[in-house]
Amino acid sequence: MTRLTDLEYLKLNKFQALMYKLKLFFFAIPAWFAKLGKGILNFFKNCGLAIKNEIVDIITTFTKGNWAVKLSFLIFGFGNIYYGQILRGLFFFLFEVIFIGYMIVPSGGLHWIGKCNFFKTGETIGTVQGSMKYDPILDTQYWVAGDDSVKVLLYGLLSVVFIIAFIYTWRLQVKQCRICMNITASGKKVRSGKDDMKSLLDDQFHKTLLSLPIAGILLFTVLPIIYMVLIAFTSYDAKHDGYSNLFSWVGLEHFNELFNFGVGGLGLAFGEILSWTLMWSFFATFTNYFLGMFVAIMINKKGIKLKKFWRTVLVMTIAIPQFVSLLYVARLFDATGILGKLLLELNLIPQSMIDANNLSLWSDPTSARILLVIINVWIGIPYMMLMATGILMNIPDDLYESAKIDGASVWQQYMKITLPYMLFVTGPYLLTSFVNNLNNFNVIYLLTNGNPINTQIGTAGGVSVGSTDLLITWLYKMTLNSGDSLYYMASIVGILVFLVVAILSLIVYNVIPSTKNEEDFK
Image 1 (cartoon, helix red, strand yellow):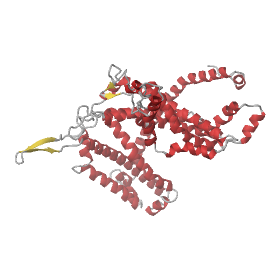
Image 2: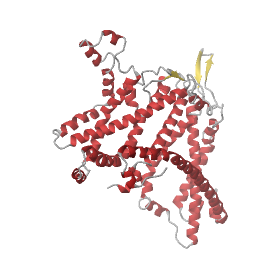
Image 3: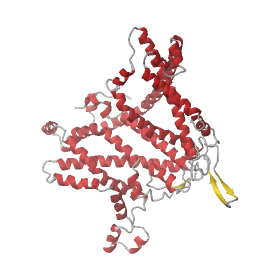
């Protein structure tokens, strides 16, 4: 496609300019995917080169290192102690002792890894099945506990993580021993343990500050995600709870089940819910954004009185807990709610409409979805209004005065000054708001609980499919509202939600001007 020059573009009318931008967008899609594919290939290529360089470096270190460096390949921290870094060397040695001790004790790492039978399709996670035994003396049955698959998988995963940490620490201390050897060979002095402690409060203070947050992220974010991914490859559900009945590895069986687009399959349900989830997130994000901005502009407009009063009234929706307000609004639009009774008292509807539940706006999929977006606007506008108020006050008045002198209308001022400024500043907020709405559990669950039931699909995999269900509420139904408690399927849905959010976030984050052209902001 031939690109227009700036002068040629300015000669286009509004419709032609819009069509030109659309053409640029669609023509850029193949190039973007090609760039993405190239980036993925480069990533794996760089990973391969990094691994190769590490292996070469390890071999070089062993062949050219002295006896102390070579011995540190076997005894952690020996080289550090040899070169005077006693505190660091003892730390490495203690780590090695703890690792070996944990791995070889009867209920240690090797024990749990062996019980996990990682990715052996058909093998149970755990080897001892709990069972009922009969006591002839007491003439009663009692439960003899066996392995718990949930705990076995968790301890096995932690053991694998410990092994990875051991390998990393081994590589780190070997590299440090080589550095100490080179420093000593050059006639310089190696830093002592006291110097190391001082550096942690001086030039290395950032590492000290980041150590706890990074540990928290690994422990409470990364490990649960990995555990969830592992659950997706198992038969973990109510029938195989891991305690009374061990669950096993099933490979990709459940992934095939999710993408089964036959009658009663989960594929149709997943596609329907995913499309509504994206649609909901789009409308919930941009209605709040533009209407909240509009309210902020109106309140900040010169001549508007009682500005503090209007802001306070809108902020009241934030002050009231959503649990209370959403349940109240749900009842308000129900068949037997205040709205129905009011219409009945005014003789505008017959009693039969309420008896037949024909009045409820929640019973029709289209009206329920529209009502959800409207109620979400009522909840979300105040947040955007407060944010937009602060940003609008920072837009220089000179821009508007110059625009008025040039004869710009109010709409032109908004499109050329206000909106670009707002989008530039609030681009990251739009992204996070879109992601939050993808997982907006409260609004959907408290207002409709995912209802009404999708009549075209009904149930899939034993789980009811609602017309207003998001992926997050459907996941909730699979685990808590389903008799089978399909934890494995919920894990798969969680993985797919993560992928959708991650891909959209990466694409948008690299496109928005806030991050792409940050230096252009004035």
